Image (tube, rainbow, N blue to C red; front, side, top):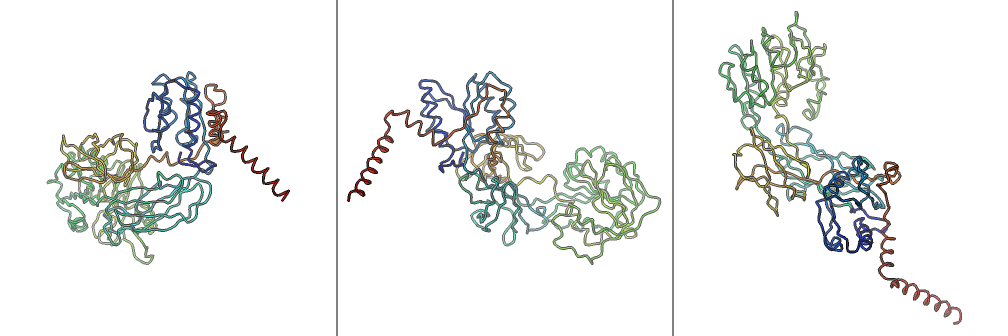
Length: 549
């Protein structure tokens, strides 16, 4: 309703005038008003005009009718612009013929809005300190917009300001390198210069510091080389637990972000029974003479030993797999890739991540769960993969925690799951911004908080989740995206939808005509008539003066 009509006035102002005319007809009647944030009953209808404000709340027509039914209302007047994202579907409106619904359509002169609809990083957090931020700006209007000013800020610091061209009815993807001269983690804001719909010009997001993945390596007594231990030895980036299978800890196994079963002759039954409790990824590296029957329950797909190993080289095309997105800034076509002997074949629902030029799979993922297998034992006589430069990025990618938390959330989006440690039963959590403190309800289980946003939070921004004086996490909240999609249903299309339903009627609101009508009704001899008569008198006087002087 911040859109403007043909006179340049916000549509909400046109609704005011039309509603005032309605109130004049209803003098003395009790009126209940529903707005996008809730409902309010006024004893004096005129008070409504002083209370209603622009709202970011997204209210569907079905929800509105549900409210009206709750109060037993049989005549409902709806004022809006037939916004497609909140009007459809209209099944409930069509189904209840006991309620008369009159939709008053306000028509915008140019229906257009610009807003940020998506934000993501090119590389997983933790692989590098420098990253590329990608974000999409959507133009909901049909006309191209040139020289749109876009700003990116981190905290109080402006990182970049530039102009962009946004094609009509499209989302333009833009990018910016961040974390170059400052830490990547922090609170950010993207601002888009746009008028007259300004409520969603700012988009907030937060990048949390990289957490140290827990990597658990379980090996047989015969395994040697320590290849995995060397890759994950940097304690600044990884928490590493390396043990023999005989000394494995159940707690480490179920909490691991990456569990590596390295060169085991047989996977013990106690571990097989706990597979469903493992939330992280599992990488299986079979031994030369593995008991494959014990492997199958862990993998979730078939693994069989080949009669004769297939010799080959890792295919360069494998590096184009989405698994490697953002890892290689440049690909050296001359660099050699690992040699492998495909010892084991796979069957069932799987996805090949890395294959050999000769066609056989090397690194395979289950199609049902995050379980991976390398089809060649990591021994020097069969492959040099574990000594090749590509081994490190592959392991780093596998070690990245699953279910990376979103960088932003939407107001009215329901429950927010947050990975958090240090919360004790009975702790009171608070959501704080620079002005207010809110107390949300939550449930805590196994290191995860399921947070329910209080309904009273209506403004976007950065909020801090706090317990006493400990700040756990920053949460970025933005408006419901449905409100930003302001495209309206055409009058003809809506009339076709309600054809044959006598209890629904569409009326167009001409704010200029409504205002004139109100003025005429309020005073039979309105001042505008006297102004018109005086103008005619002065015009005639001027004509006579020019003629006879």
